[in-house]
Every structure is written in C-alpha cells, then in structure tokens.
Length: 490
Image 1 (tube, rainbow, N blue to C red):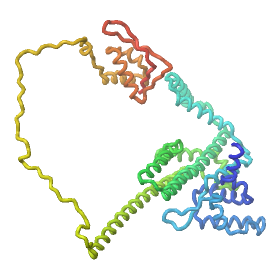
Image 2 (cartoon, rainbow, N blue to C red):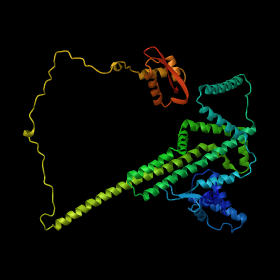
Image 3 (cartoon, rainbow, N blue to C red):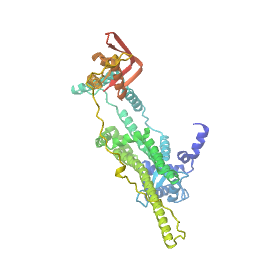
Image 4 (cartoon, helix red, strand yellow):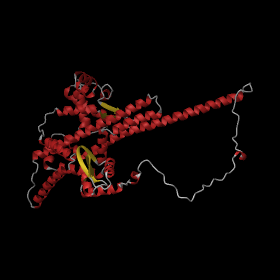
C-alpha cells in the first residue's frame, strides 16, 4: 500500500469515490435501506424510483425543500453510470423494465460504514474459540501420523463417553454456555452469514467481468474460430479451477443437497427459539428493526444469491453459443455468395459466349484400365524340404546361463499381499509388508513393490527416512536394499 497505489485507488475504486462525495450520506443511507436491510439482490426500476422518492421526501421534510432537488430517476441513473458504478443497471432476459443491483464495491463501502457504528456488545470469546477450533481441525485433518490421529480421536471419544455417562446418571451437563456466551455466538453467526451473502456479489462480479471480456474479445477478434474459443474456454477453466471457483462449486453442491438444506433450516429454527436469542430479536422489534429477522429465511437468501451467480455464468455459455451460431451463419453466407457469383458468371457467358474457339481448356478424360493379360501367371509356392538328420548344436563365445536364470515377479500376488496388510490397518510401510511376506525374487521383487507404490496415488515416498529391505540371493547370502521409506495407504 504505497502512495502511488493509494492515489490510483482513490481515483478509480467506486467504494473510495463513494465515501468522498458530498452526498455520500444520501447514497449510503438509501442503498443500505433499500438493499442491505431487506437483503434484496435486485430491485426493479419502478420500485426503486418510488422508494427513493419517499426517502427524498422524508429528508426534505426534515432538512428543507431545497435539499437534493433532482428527481429520483436522475439520481439512480447517475449512480449507475460508469463514472460512479455504485449500482448496476441491467435488463433481465425477456424483460423490458430495468433492474438495479448493488455493485460489490458499494457493498464493501456500506459494510465498512456499518462497522464504524459503536457496538454495545463486542464478542471476543466466541471469536477466540472459533479460531482455536479452526486451528485444531486444520492441524488434526492434515496430520499424517497414525498414532497422533488415534490419540486425538480417542480423547474426543473419551469426552463424549463421559458426557453420555453423566447424562444417563441424571447429572447436569459438564458445561452449558451462559446467556452472554449464547448471545455472543449468535451475533458472530449473524455477522458471518451477512459476510457470506456479500461475498456472492464479488463472485458474481468476477463472472460478469469474464463475460464482458469475452464479448469484447469476440467483437474485436481477428483470429480463427478454434483459436479464439480455445483462449476463452481456457480462461473459463482457469476461473472454475481457481480456489474461488472450487469453493463456490463446493458451496453449490452443499446447497443443492436436500438433506443439508433441511439440516441448516432445522438448526436455524432451534437457534432462534433459544430464550437468549428470542430476547435479542424482541429488543430489535421494539427498537423498530423488524428486518433483523432475516436469518430465519437464510437458506432462501443463499439460494437466491447462488442462483444469480449461476445465471451470470450461464450468460457466458450463451454468449459462446451465439458466437458459434453467428460464425456458422457467416460461413454459410460466404458460400452462398460464391455460388451466386458463379451463377452470374455462367449466365453472362451464356448470353455473351467468347469468340475464340479455345477460350477454356479441360484435362483430357482418361480411364485407368488394367488388362487381364498384363497380370503375371500363377506360380505355385516352393515347398521347403526338411532333412531327417539331427541339427547340429552351435557354439558361442559367452555363457548363456543368464538367459535361463530369469524369474517372473507376479505383481498380482504383491498387490494381494499389500491389500491383506491394509485390511488389518489403515497404512503399512514396505518393511512391514516384507517382514510378513519375505522377498523371494530378489531385487526384482523390491523394484516391483516400488513400481506399485509409484503408480498408486495414495502411497507416499519419504526421502528423508530410509529403510533396509532384506533378502537372500541364490547362494544363501543375506543382502539388503537401502531405499526411501515407502508407505502404502488404504
């Protein structure tokens, strides 16, 4: 964040530009009231103009008739202009009335302004517990040591068993959260839920930016169709395979699961029925904030936000389809024009034949003939005469015993041995396997084990640790192979 970057950000970023305007209180207050409080993703133009007219009327009644003299439609058009981009004005498919939606930058500015409000209750314990729980899950889920994972799971099981025993004995639970802790965690849930909904506008903006770049590239394209499509699909795959794209795909899969949605709705309903949460909701209703009950319909808000992102991504696919159709139409049109040109030239020659006799030349027609008598006569194959005498053995200058001492390593047998070891425990090192199933084929069998581990995605090689694999050669001598630690995982 150096000086040049901040100067550029102040001049180009809509969120900073909004905060520096003289009528920023009007813009921020109305947009927060129209979009954020009722949690609306898009509003039709007629409805938004009416809402802004009522908002301006209230302000003029309180602060004077000369305050903000322009019409509501003019304000909305200026806020949606490219110079400001506080709103996004667009026409839905098959609709003739425009709609408005908040831009991602505007929502960030409204969130920042809302964070400046002094909070009577700042939850620190729940955030610390959340960080602690996330760290513990991260470390535990990435732990590859079996003993450590077993110890952690055993500790959790003991805690659960102890809690079950206490409840069956009629004792009180070990630890119930206090009223303050319940409110604190509920506030954190609300804050996280709102941030999640606001993040969808940024995801939608990214897909919409890709769609805009695609349209511009198609309009100015001078490359072949195949090369242009390869670049466009490459960028789309890059977004889909990015961390943001993978995260949204996982979210959409989660949301499309009926079991998950019902579980989310049930948990929200139970949480809102808690006495501490009900008291918070009642206080908000008495204070004139009925919109704060939006969390009860949170899954519908998530579905609406995710559906808008999906529709934006579908627009990109529709644009590519139209591009292919237009290219096909242009190619057919070019072929039809060439045929029409040939027809015109033929009609012109019909009415104005050339005077010279040799005005055109054609290659002489020629038929490829193959006469029967040009083929060669049949000649019967020669029979090989076999002698009854025994063949003589040849001599060589080297020993051929090595050719007869080869032995076959059965990979299927090795796979079965690995599978039997993994059925007993989740993972096994190669040294454990050869201890139970000794090596009988020498170094070739060890190489076969390494080949199987290399082709198995679940197997790992640890170059920092070494292991000694023993076997006996044909002379009965004990030999060892020094190889990296190889671990097979089920």
